[in-house]
Image 1 (cartoon, rainbow, N blue to C red):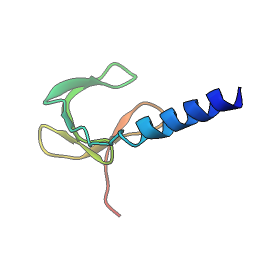
Image 2: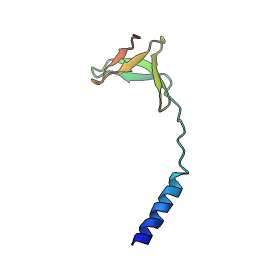
Image 3: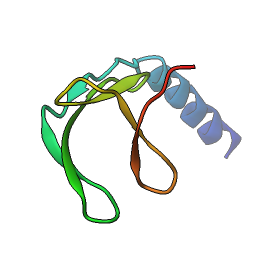
Image 4: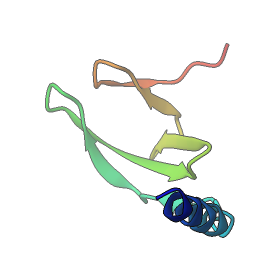
Length: 76
């Protein structure tokens, strides 16, 4: 039993070394987004898994809060 466990551990570590994390860029293009109160607007979300941006057609940045609404972003 111990020998089988050792073989499985070795196989796991050998295959784990071949995994590579590659950023996956995405771009939604201009799409219609909907607020929880059914108001719609056109915006674009793009970036990768580390950082992303969201802008309206007029190039205003926006963020989505925990309540599901989108708000204009404000720089501090």
